[in-house]
Length: 376
Image (cartoon, rainbow, N blue to C red):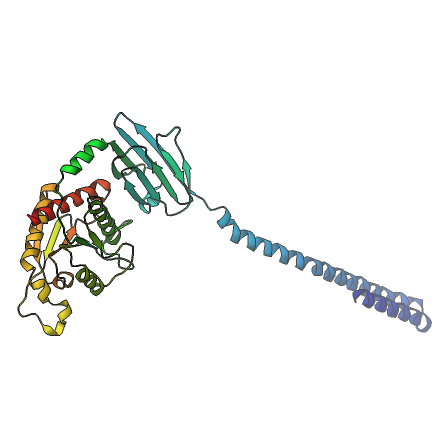
């Protein structure tokens, strides 16, 4: 189009030039010719500039698109991974394992332990610096690290600053001695079984501190107690087996369907101590509040047994932890409406106590001794 315009303008210019030669003479024709020549040069430059712009804008647009794609994709592909260093030192009967990383990273790390395994769930992908020749099996995944030990042992975990690190002390144990002590350990009869209620669950976290929450700690304890009783051939029931929300009425209905010998509801307190609750009988309880949550005739028969159960478990906890035990009577719905001897136990807050394998075993031992003493 611009070429056509140029040719047309040029033709008109020369036509005018010859016309002025004839009409006005050479001098005026030269002046007119110079004016048209300047116009032609200016027009030519404009046509050239437009062509360059026409070629430049698509290139500029293409570079802009590539830049946006690069900026959006690069953080995903080149995300900086957290650096985790794994170290260990061993002696004759003990092993120490250390995980070093940034403090904020370790605070969001969830750790679970058993007698033969340490499992760490990290909040984000990581890069591991492994040790040479570790005396354990090392399994890595994108956001998790698992250490499997050949021999069972007692694992203690604690966190230290400067540099931030998780320290695991594994004390090798004699399995045969453990089995003998377990056989001598007092085990309750529990003809109809024991029902354990892990408090909270699902969106109801309960008390939280760092990466620990009441719902997770209590569920872990409930499962451990259930496993212990199962190994002893005793019946046990759990109101929940997973991280799910269950209403108080659903928990009460479950307990009353099973009618166990003993019902224990597990919770965490806001302090460092143990608090035990047993049901309280109120003659003038308001009927308007609902018979379902009032002290039913079924629990009425077990009020004294519930008090005795709370006393026995409280004594066992005091003997095991050498701590003061607070006992209270309260008309709590979860206690007032079950047809079994019952107690609600508040354990020390996760803010003050680390519920590792050793701590959980001590709590379970106290529960077993307390229930067995109650049955005698």
